Length: 232
Image (cartoon, rainbow, N blue to C red; front, top):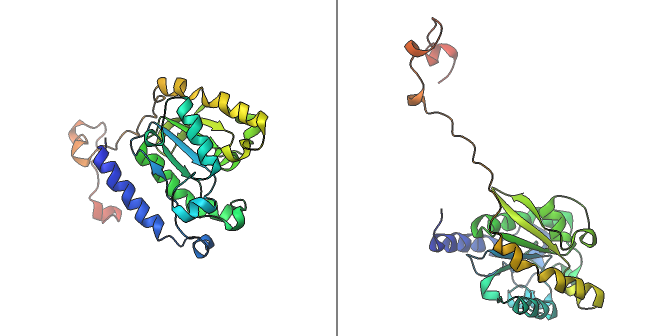
């Protein structure tokens, strides 16, 4: 079990790695890597798509109009940015805010998996299609999935995955905003349920010292010396 201080130091290490990342061509056009921000001990995590122009300039996620809507929705359920962790699938802005490309997602997803592993959230809200499809490992679109929570194994942990419409899309579609607000207001209920049952860790293999000696084993044949079996 990691302490809060250990978690923060490990996250800083991942950030330093991401800050100098050249895994995909987006490093050639970015201004700043947008790693993520918020509470490293958060029970609630939001995962969006990719940084936009404001985020690329400031180095923080969701600081434009979509971010203001996210702040408003958080306030409606009694939360603040300091209570949650917010990040994106991509840590660098795609030119002209185009959709993330498969090679970019593949190159960048390791940073997201490590954030999930270190922060250990109870609930992960995926915002929009790209993060929902990635974390579910399934091509089903957000319009069919929004507001339907499920337990998913992300890395070594089970989390409550909760797909939501992306705030940027809801800004311009009143019906989508209404659905996003209704889905958002269920988040406290999901948090109150606590973490889902975690997968059992695999049983460790027995140490050689713990193996029974030959006298206690059935049969008359003892193990041959390692050198005779070609083992060194």
